[in-house]
Length: 101
Image (tube, rainbow, N blue to C red; front, side, top):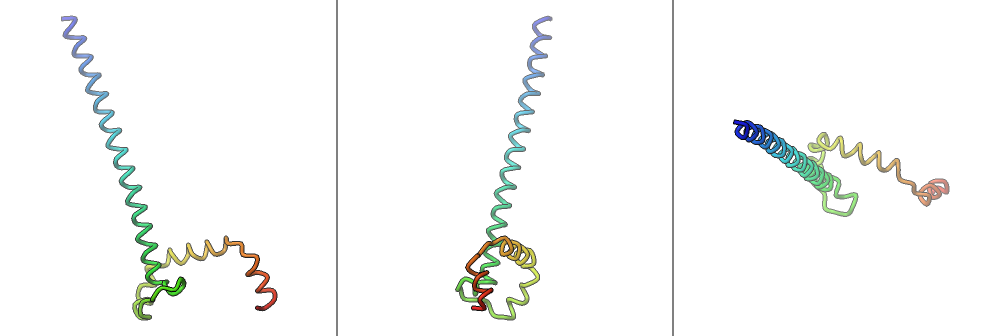
């Protein structure tokens, strides 16, 4: 009787530990998969912005009509571009602006 009670307690704790580890493993997979999806979404957004603003880097551009139709979807990318350009520190451009070049 004592051995069966101890065995039941051991099995119960074993199953609890096993369920906890399986849950922990599932949470890790969820977290990793969402991180991968977020990175993939960022890359797709970068590609989309590159397609619509390709003229800024020398790529062929979309027709004007299509670019204007897609412009509302690029609101976030435009804001990010302005924030990054404000943080840039280009002393040569500042001197050229002062000299009216």
